[in-house]
Image 1 (cartoon, rainbow, N blue to C red):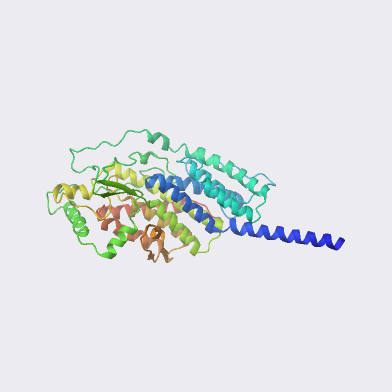
Image 2: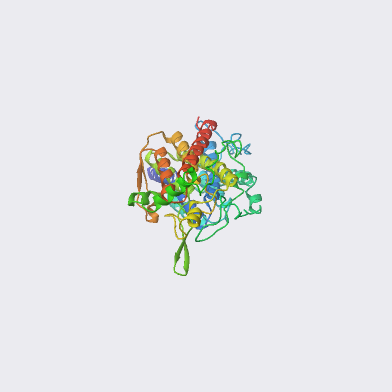
Length: 442
């Protein structure tokens, strides 16, 4: 009888250990966190958020997940409290609680990600599916409960902090006034003729840079379209000539870096929209690709997302300060008025001023953050756009990718080449500043 009881106990112990291993293998896999980011990316895309608003979602969500990881691995990671503006203290886990920090990080990412901008519950179905699988693999009730409770305490602090970044106040701020008397100033572009997006984004609280004015953009070329020898005239012609003679490779580069979250398509009298990841969403995907290639564990992957998201967040603020300081007109508008009323760029012109290039700015900033995390000269293949029917592209490094983006915006016909260079240089400065200032790994 004693032997039978011992056998039952051994079987029960073996089963429990097996289940313990199974649920941890599932929940602690960095690919699960990357999948969760992709899910948030998809929800953001579905809500038609412009790229800087999307970046705000990703950043607060990533910071929430990161602070959970800090609590679970205090010997490896350092809190952002006191390092990013306005975030002072974070709650600590209660002693003796059976918290699974990877699961808690996922809970926090989902809760904050869906709460920052769009209705709570937007990712509930996805979360339920994750928990169903984890439970089937032996996730104990007490661990799930304790993990969620701790995640909720972290999330509450991050959400409260997010509400003080001036986002809500800028929702009701004065709209952009179009000055049609000044030929150098931005005007709405076809086919949507949308209002200028987020003219007050420079007023959003920064994460690390002191202010939106930390790295002021140099003045753009003086508007001088009547003088054929002026720098401005030459740049307008350069955009038009490039757009009129694009090769298949140049079109692929432009398409790959388009990242238009809501493109208006016109077919006869019918207009309809198609969606893709925004520029910030594109870089979320790159982070996941890099983490998988580097075989990073779950905690290191969360760290990579948090650091790069912060670089994107501040780069958008810096860039939008330049955009609505100079309010420069888009190439499409100039070409239509002075050269060819029917000319259209290869890509659809975004609804905000031309200078400096936003995608170039945030891409350069992201590249600096990613380089600091994974190293320089790390080759990778970017498959982000494959789900939108655009074939992959391969790069020698993150900086190589951001350099190609300079060409992509020019080939697309939506930016002057010097604007792309200026944006890239400023984004590099923002990214480098953040890399130097933040102390995240011990």
